[in-house]
Structures are given as C-alpha cells and as structure tokens.
Image (cartoon, rainbow, N blue to C red; front, side, top):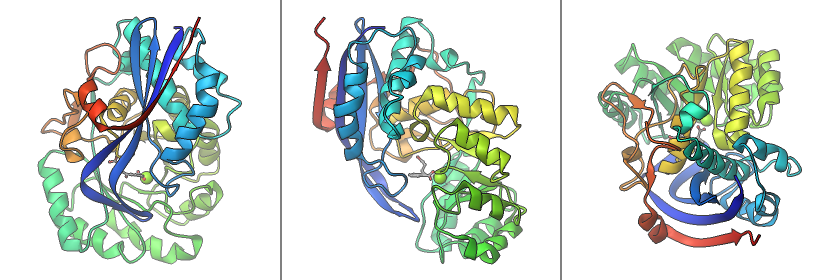
Length: 371
Ligand code: OSB
Ligand code: MG
C-alpha cells in the first residue's frame, strides 16, 4: 500500500441536542476527517479529539497541528504491507493518539478494501451483531432524565449509561432505578470525584449498577485501585487507558473490573486490539466507548466491537440519535432489539457522502507524494 495522498479536513456538525458531561456541554462538533489514497483506493478515518482539552489533552486544533507537522511527513510516500505497520512509523511522536488513530484507521479501511473484506473480518471480528447501549447527558431534573431513559429503552437499547457529577448523581440514579428495576444501568463521572468522596460514592453500591466509569482523575490508575477495594460495584476505566500497558497495569492493580476501549484514545485499531487481548487473557470484559462521532468514526467503532471480548453493550448507537443527516450511507441503524449488524461490504462497509462532506468542510489540506 503506497501512501500517495493524504487529506485532512475539518467539518462542523451540529448535534441534535446539547450533550452535557461533568466537564462541559457540547453542541457543535468540530470533527477532523482523515482520508488516505493508496493505489487508487481511498480510505477514511475520524480524529475523535474534542474541541477543548477537557476529556483528554488533545483538541481539534492540536490534532491539526500534529498531523500537519509530524504525522503526514512520517507516512506520506511510504509503502506499507499492513495498516498495523503504522504505529511503528509514528513511534517517535509521543501521545496524540487520536491524531494518529485517524490515519491508521483510514489505512485499515484501504487494506480491507484491497483484500475485498469487511474491515471487521480483517480485524478478526467474530460477532455478526453487536450489542448497543446509550450514553445520556446530564439533565436538569431526575424526572426529565427518566423520560429520556424510557424513550431509549423503547427504541431497544440494551444498556443505559447516565452521566453524573457531584449534586447531579444519587437522586438521578435513584429515580431511574426506581422506575426501571431490571435494566442494565451504569454511570460515568468523567473524573468528577476524588478519594475524599469515597463515602458518597459508596451510596452508588445500592443501585445494582453494571459499573461506575472513571470516577477519579483522568491520569490516575492507582487511586482507582484504592477506590475499587472499597466498593462492591465494578469500576470501569475510560480516560486512564491510553495503551495496552495501561490496561495491564490497571488489571494488575485491581483498579477496575471492566475496560472501555476507544479507538482514538488508544491510538487506532492495532493498539485497541492489543488492549482487547490483554483484557481477554485476564477475563476482563470490554466495551466500545464513543466520542460523539460522525458515521465514519461510528463505522470504525462497529468494526472493532465485533472482536470476541466486546461482551458488554457499547456506546455505539444510531446516527439519528446525534445527527439530522450523517455523512455515511446507509446511516448506522440499530434494530428494535438494540443491535447493529456488522456490514457485509468491503472496508468500513458504509459509503461516504462526499458531497455532504464537501459542504460541511471549513478547512482542508492535502499532501501528495511526487514519485
Ligand atoms: O466519557 O464516554 C465518555 C462523550 C464525549 C466525551 C467522553 C464521553 C462521551 C460519551 C458519549 O459518553 C458517547 C457517545 O454516545 O458517543
Ligand atoms: Mg467515559
């Protein structure tokens, strides 16, 4: 696969509704798309950095810089046998995993198309159908939240995750649990608590939650091990896991019993598969997290979620929950029983709407290799 051309573009997409987490509210996404051209075949990836460094240190603009000045010169003109060779080429760039993942994943799309295989099969996926959950932003009142949960359950979703933060936690979880005693329910704090809050967090033990996601600092695996030993409920790490070594550390320290894998956060399909493998060999279930992606990022999430260890419902849900019109067709659709079928077409398996992408583009850059 000779990398002949790279394109980086920023598109703006407006979420149907604002999404509130413990770190802020998002309504307009500034999404970077990565396109690579090899031997006349084009592949697509998404850079999942948010607009501000509030989830992890990357942003739309840091990714633009790192791709322009470091990633593009490292890969342009290279002739690779496999997309899995990309991490070695980028090993000299520390961090910036989301920026790297966009281009590595675009190459996985190319490689799968060249082999006339759906990407999920190239990755070694075994699940033809993946199980889906939803992540619900913080609401004004418990009553409003219960209404949202009811709507998602009737759409078929198999697990409900509630975003929480101090003063928007116990009452909200209690109200949802009271109304829906039997559902798979979890919470995600995005690092809104500290070890001083142990007594408070213990109250969550009474709601039979599937997990509590990332309650403590984004870069602190050790403190999560101190918390896990005092809670009955399983902890799940998201922000803390940036590569497979972090996964191994977290498991060894008993800092969590479940891991959320995000393609961008760990740097692409190769590393995601390694996190998956470390978890699988330790019997730690994993699931696929989301970053309010467009259909391109979503399609990559679907492919990854077919790996055998993804036994828990992910935050991979229908395009129509986020966007009036998505940039792929068909859009990502969820069945009435809350699952997504792995696509049969080669590559990411969804076709990219170039005209719409062109209309949504606010800036773009192309690098061409002159042989
Ligand atoms: O922590 O999983 C998270 C969105 C933005 C940043 C972080 C997170 C999230 C979500 C939304 O929970 C998941 C999605 O539906 O894409
Ligand atoms: Mg999370």
